[in-house]
Amino acid sequence: MKKYLLIIAILSSSLVYAQDDLLEELESETTEEKFEQPAFKAMKIGNLQSTKVAAKGDLYLYVSHRFGTLKDGVDTFFGLDNANTKIQFVYGVFDGVQLGISRESLRKTYAVSAKFKLMSQNDKFPFNVVGYTTANINSEVSTDRYPYLEFGDRVSYASQLLISRRINNKFSIEIAPTFVRQNLVYEPEQPHSQGALGIGGRMKVSKRMSINADYVYNFRRFDDTIYNNPLTIGLDIETGGHVFQLLFSNAQSTNEPGFISNAEGDWSDGDIFFGFNIVRVF
Amino acid sequence: MKNLILSMLLVCLCYSVHAQKYFTKTGTTDFKASVEAFEPVAATSKSTTAILNVQDGSIAALLFMKSFHFKVALMEEHFNENYMDSDKFPKGTFKGKVEGFNLSELSETAKEYTIKGTLNVRGINKDIETLAKIKMVNGAILLIADFSVTPQDFDIKIPKIVRKKIAERINIHIDYELVEKK
Image (cartoon, rainbow over all chains, first blue to last red; front, side):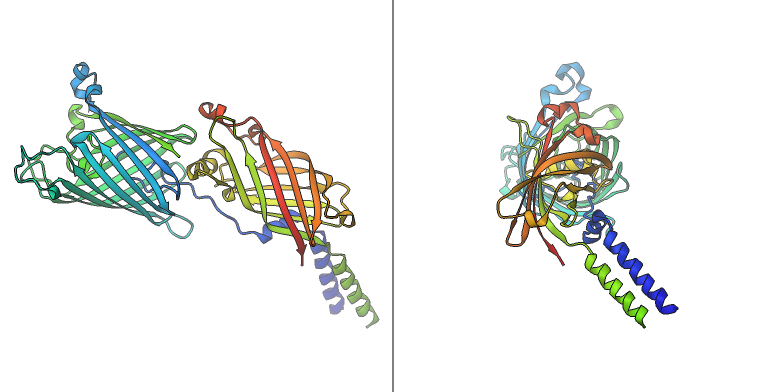
């Protein structure tokens, strides 16, 4: 009797096999390729770099404006007369490696930067980890003011480790341990080497809009400095292929050494700057 | 003992009935939603899996949205994130039938057949009927077909600002080379 049961079992299983569904058969042949939503849509949260890196072969043109302080009121039409403009090209050289060059009008600064993806958030690893480093050249300072100025004094650097996590599809956070080196400081008591910690996040309010904020705490400021820690609050609007960022910040520079060391404005008395980043991808 | 042998024979018979199928893991699926004068909105997936039962002409195909590659990677990201919701609906499937299919009729000259079936994208079913060109070359079945769908068919919302840049009808082109599945 047992034998017959066995045979019936074999028979019925082979019958099921013969009748099976083609789609189910395909599904058993494939392994699912999962799409991971990115933590951030744009390369910057506001001022702080995000963990987004240009894909290989993509060329981005960024135009960033930071108008003058809103505090000036109608006199400069809320800062419109004193805009700081930055033009930047970013190119994805390899998978996960981008290089950038830029020029911003504030302190006539030229900058080069590199950003490289180290780890990506997925089922097995909980964070995106990205390295970022930039060198800036201040071409405005002159030997009239600093008679012993050498080329090296014009240079400042920033290096950051960017660690982000998409908590859910709406909410992402990032922390950014940072080292800044300024060969020329604008206040004599200010140490040249500074450690800082950036934090930032984004909250999607609709499919194509998010509210973003970032803040950087600089650990090496002297007591009476005129500069503050930068706080930036912005709105990302994704316009089908491009991301448009509107923001308010108490820093006018968009370069890391500039806004981490020398944020000139102060949120508490309305001394803030309005600005935007627009991007075109080729 | 006689019964056992009989049963064994039956089992063997069952296995031989087991359908003969042709299969691919590297089928090509292209779509174009471009509007002239604007940048191309087009992508290709080269890892579509498809299977054809040559006894009754039933056919199925499956692809992962993530396997669609665009010229601009950012467009690809937005395609997955905002239009297809690929984290929620990772795959698209098709299940249908090649009408009047007969393996012995196939030759190196393409013959037209009607394919009828159901396309499932973003969890929504849409009936499709189209003509396919099928031929047999070196033991492989080559299948080419074109059809079109609209974003509304699958409840894909196109924001106003890009509406002019995305075609009202999306043309899909498939190209499979199916080999016998052992």
